[in-house]
Length: 117
Image (cartoon, rainbow, N blue to C red; front, side, top):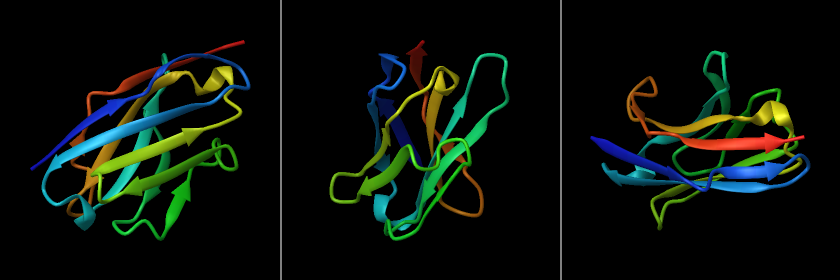
């Protein structure tokens, strides 16, 4: 079992930055991959970024490449998403997820990010 709690969302102007955090508990954090997803108003859930269990490999969605950075601190059981050059289309609820087996089966409750133009 894994419990995930996101924080760091809020309201920011276009061009600004935010850093999201995801605190994990339960199963040993350093043994599974983690990812961020988001769901904007009226949109389907979208993959944002993922990082392997040791943090050595990352993958990003096309819409955030070059602007967002995913990272993890296994000593603090925490996943991060640094978001720079934010755009109004980044407005969404952001979720962190854990992949213990072959799919992302554990999810947080989400944190709202709103980017004003």
